[in-house]
Image (tube, rainbow, N blue to C red):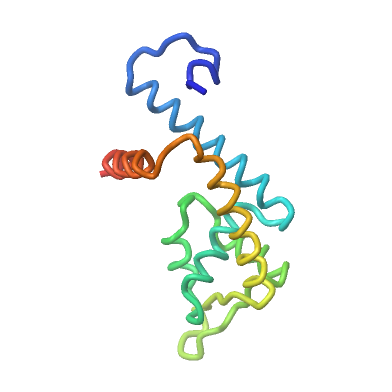
Length: 150
């Protein structure tokens, strides 16, 4: 669906404004799908991001700062998200013996099981959203988005 049809706007002032609206609309569309896919696991997409980061570092735990630096949403309150995952039994805090102020975060077995199961669902369902574009087109979009951020 064209962005003009999706938001019921006939034209845009220029292509850059249209691109901005299109990126924001598409991002929201993707995150709404992602939220829906994660609902059965009772985790937010930000919590899912943390679980994936921790899974990728296993068996090594990570500091709160490292997790924050790797987050997709840089405005997330990582400490609050970790607290919620801790209450759900998906992560553990490991105090640093050399520095009592430093705490590392580790994925629990429950957290590992949740991230593995949710990742399978998310990856398969997200793949279905991209059936209208080819692998080559996906590469072009990735290159253009990388170029936009540079």
